Amino acid sequence: MSTTVAGMIFIASLIAALALVHKPLGDHMYRVYSTTRHNAVERGIYRLLGVRADAEQSWPVYARGLLAFSVVSVLVVYGLQRLQDKLPLSLGMEPVTDHIAWNTAISFVTNTNWQAYSGESTMGHLTQMAALAVQNFVSAAVGMAVAVALVRGFARRRSGTIGNFWVDLVRGTLRILLPIAFVGALVLVAGGLVQNFSGVHELTTLTGGTQGITGGPVASQEVIKELGTNGGGFYNANSSHPFENATSWTNWFEIFLILVIPFSLTRTFGRLVGQVRQGYAILAVMGVLALTSVILTNVFELSGNATVPQAVGAAMEGKELRFGVSNSATFGAATTLTSTGAVNSFHDSYTPFGGMMTMVNMMLGEVAPGGVGAGLYGMLILAVITVFVAGLMVGRTPEYLGKRIGAREIKLASLYFLVTPALVLIGTAAAMGSAEQRAGMLNGGPHGLSEVLYAFTSASNNNGSAFAGLTVNTPWYDVALGLCMAFGRFLPIILVLALAGSLAAQSPVPEGAGTLPTHRPQFVGMVVGVTVVLVALTFLPALALGPIAEGLS
Image 1 (cartoon, rainbow, N blue to C red):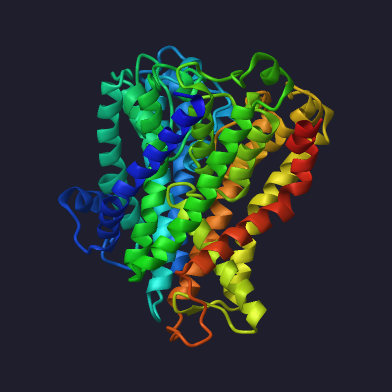
Image 2: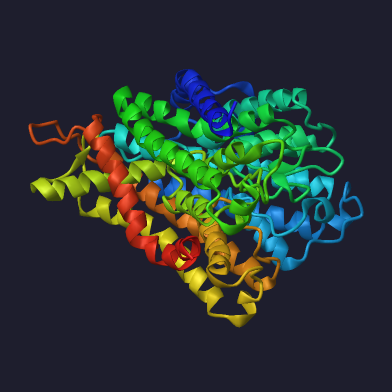
């Protein structure tokens, strides 16, 4: 069987598996976020937090709760790192330096899980489990909570509330992420991954974040990693290490875990707004963008259009022999299309255009299907922008799901998509403008620019993967990338919640002859076009100086 055919079968089986679980998982998440019943464990947590679980919140209250939770989380994660030598299970590790502790705390709380250190030689068991593993779950749950809050904004009529942040956080963690992580960890253990005392952390990796192992937190951590939130890993080799990704079929399963929740959330969206076909339209947009990216990344890597790959016959540098070119390229596309950041090959070693695709995936806003929750609310913002553009073309006030998209709504949507490009381009320009920061590049010329551009794109989009050639373990990069992670996470979230509140307060608008049907192929194509055009207009000059220049040279 040829490599190309094997790669096609690999991708087709992934699509089939995702289609199989789309409805049951999507319906389960719909029930999680729509039921009014709380189980005994949840009621106990609410009493401990002093939360009135049945009290609805306006968007400012929802946002304040989310930000307060995140600030406390940053302080706890930072404190555990700085004090780990005085705490049990430290394994004799010294306190983490202040700039790395800051970067790591922001990284895991923002669901980025960027790692500027080697986990095996930096963090003790307690820090890994109580700080990083916990955030792998709850930071992913925060993203899902924001997505559901926005969907409620579309679904509700003349309402001043969008739900209860604490209820959404607890339910997402206990009813969705933990069960999937538990089952996924058992599957990976059966596949040969190590699981022992510290394995709880690895479990959190594949469902919401990712880390590696010391004495062996691998299997469970790897599940959380692939479920949507991490990079790095305990051995700094991530999912290319046999303790974190043992065989070709565990590689398939990890990609499945990366994609399963974001794609299934479109079904949840359709159920919550009472129009399942709207969910299928958003799923189609995500699917078109994702499949296009996966195919292009495979084509660029399999063609080996660079000097060394052409000389040896394959683009195998930086790739695991266990997985080969195609399965590595598919993993690379999946991890950058989402906010996972787990890698099974070094993106810095990809062909120029293959490496470009990993950057473009993140520059799309990670909406195909995007991060856990973040992908859905990013795609819905794109849908809002699309109906606004369509409204301009026909001279009609745009509507989406029965809500008018007026001046306030389009300003919030526009600001949402200006935040990340501003962070990426300003951060890259600042780094490239300093000889001291340029010294951290492993390569010069266009590829060196690509290394820096990738780092700020990954941080600002809360992805967590890296080109790996750039030395970022310096105070300047730790602070700069930490700021990009923080602003790239929380400024868009505030804008999304403000939009949710504005939509929820509106009266429904009846459909008329001029209403744009937003469930048909025409709308799917328009959203895809708007997404690509926005990225092209914003990032093409930077890409032209980096991977495109390298690829054409």
